[in-house]
Length: 112
Image 1 (cartoon, rainbow, N blue to C red):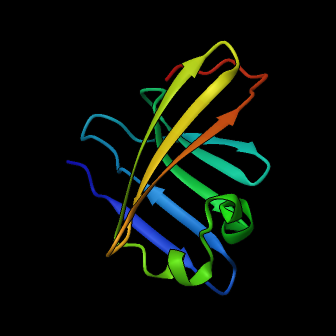
Image 2 (cartoon, rainbow, N blue to C red):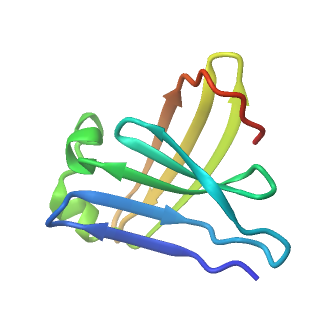
């Protein structure tokens, strides 16, 4: 069973989005890509994302700490491309949706 977690720590400006793990998978480790940290499962899937300095990171999308504090839901998907990992996040606020795309060039082998 999956448990979803969405949390914004305004004091530390950290956004956490986690899909949870299936009953047959567990936490395996992290990939630290600077401001973005990916949680990897034993099935080699990205199950969680933490974004450090989130309001600065999403400033180009006109999102600030007040917006992130009022976040209702966020869904993400990750897929591997030759350029690295493509992370697509759909932020759901009370009155708007904001799609975000992040490209993480990775030097490590990762299956998604």
